Image (cartoon, rainbow, N blue to C red; front, side):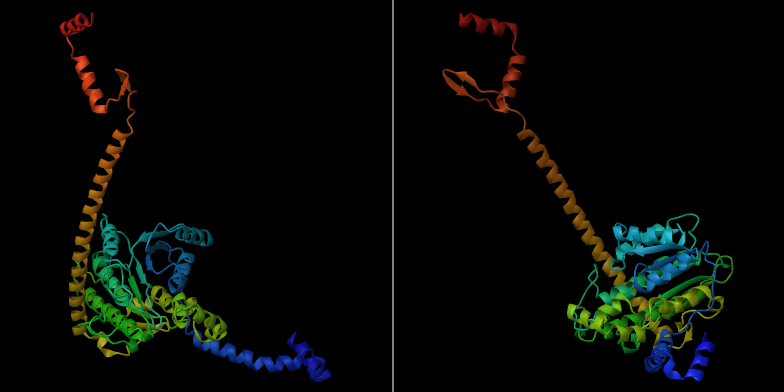
Amino acid sequence: MPVEFLGQVFSEGASSVPYLPTILRVLPWAVLIYILRWFFGGETNKVERVMHGKVVMVTGGTSGLGAAIVHDLASKGAQIVLLVRSTQDYWLIDYISDLRKKYSNNLIYAEECDLSSLHSIRLFCTKWLDNAPPRRLDSIVLAAGVMAPPFSTRAVTKDGVEAHWGVNYLAYYHFLTLMMPALKVQPPDRDVKILVSTCAAYILGELDLNDPEFLERRYPGRRPWLVYGAAKIAVMALVAEVQRQLDEYKRPDGMPTNVKIWSVDPGIMRTPGTRRWLSLGSLVGLLGYLVTWPLWWVVLKSTNEGAQGFFAGLYDPEFGRGRGGVLIRECKVSPFRKPEIESEILGQQLFEVSKAQVAKIEKAAALERAKQKKKDEEAEAKAARNSKSEEKDVTPKPKSQKSGGKKVAFSDEADTIAAESSATDTPKSTNKRRTKKT
């Protein structure tokens, strides 16, 4: 076909080819768009791995980046545990059912683990750890997160913690510290991998351990990337500190701990969070996003392209043999733009601050639950008393009796007394009444 086309051009001239001038005008732009799309799409993971029998936990696995990771894992036969806010969501049931049918993989489940509630995280981790022998665990993918658009007001979690700090960092600190026993007991020949999502916005962040939630400082509603970036700095420092603790752990059998954890920067993608950020969380902004969507399609990654770094960490054995606690970007290890992230001093200080904050929050939440439980018990007791009272009120009353031409209505209490007195009458008293009547 190309040979015939070129032959026609040389023999009969360019004018003999239909729409050739239009094609020649459009072709350079198409090539340019293709090159730009290839450039912004980033690197592609070239290593595949059989995941049958592997148990993988995923947060944020129902949309965006997490959904792309879940689809790829499901296609490879992995057993997936989705950590979600609620398992009672009908949409979630349909989502899991569709995944099972599409990939013929019935080993996809959901467990409740709400990242906006430290109590929910503790309940899940306690449930997971409460098993003998220890449950198998091959990988953890922490891909959930929140990102407020510019000009937004301060948002908080169920525990009253600033949303960026609470979900993007504190929840992961709580989760990883609670799951540490499950990670340490995995066999030494099992390469356990933990991948935590981060973002290049950490470069713009300002982390202050004395005020991580911007309570004493003015909340940067117009510049939310400051608090978002601070949470990402903290979570990357957390990753480095967790790896140090895992490396220092001495197993009872003397074997090394084969657990690696990395921060992964997927790049800027076309996700629901990015759409909300670019549209400023408004309908007018959403209209502008839709109008400019062709531009975002060119310069922003798809979720599958952003997930390539996660696939490299999950599937490539070279990462398992390399260093942990580092940053994966474009399917390879990349240096931190902020060197303090790797500081052991920062990691230890971060652990101390986070431990104290979690303890304070959980104590306050426990007291609140105890108060609420007491109120519920009092309400149930009151409802039970009211129910008994209503049952007495609906007891049918006897017909009124005539006495001297007047109607006399006996109350329930009077009826009871009359019945008791008639039941206790003796024959002698009955005879006296008969004599008097005659």
